[in-house]
Length: 325
Ligand code: PBG
Image (cartoon, rainbow, N blue to C red; front, side, top):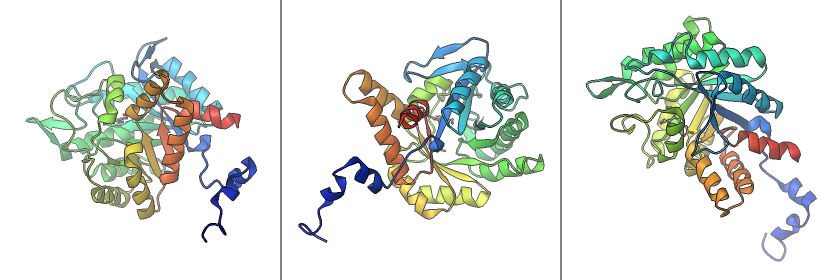
């Protein structure tokens, strides 16, 4: 149909029509809030590049989780900042590790809130890499056992779901096996399946003290130039038993979200990462954009591209906007 028979503006003329025509909607159900756990008590240390976010001691973290639950957010994603690091990341799988303690505390107070844990070694290794380092090289297979142990220890603490973000080959299968052997066959894996080697993680690395101490992550995280490789990564994780496939970052990779959504029949998650958050916050603080509107438009775009759920530092603010509608 062509103009003048078809007039695209006809269905845009009223709010009622626009609502009827809306193809994509957002709700608090779509959002997952990342939180950073640190030791101590009464600690609420601001993260300068992520205004509104803090390193939280467990007492505060439970309160933040409670606010998310009350706002209708179904899940939080926990990251830990340990007090000591070593070559084998022992604090990642310690029974009394920071994430393990945080999971327990949140589940005790908020049994209905889903607690997802990030499974990685980089916050816990002294070299800051996501796997075990042998002679300056990240050793894939030697890392799998530690990743599986970490996931099992999270499940043991009460985590509802584990989310490996390390990008070692074979980790989903190793974690699935570890969980199943330990009676956690009901604990799903949200795999960071296509995780790109991105400069957008900058603020997170400041927040989680997880920057690599030598080199970079290009031997394990994906080259931003590649899309077909994302399909291979995703296919591998599906076959190894992932329950949810994640793409990360989100906004510069909407094409990947779209392709993966068409490729797999599993739920697709997108991680709207720290740098994406920081840019909008900074531009808002400068008065250059309307931060709230840009936030909602970004989240809608990620959903429209095909994400079923979004991990985002905007989760609380976006839920407030959505709940006020
Ligand atoms: C740990 C991990 C990272 C992020 C999530 N898990 C950092 C990295 O890979 O360097 C990034 C999250 C963000 O930037 O918001 N491997």
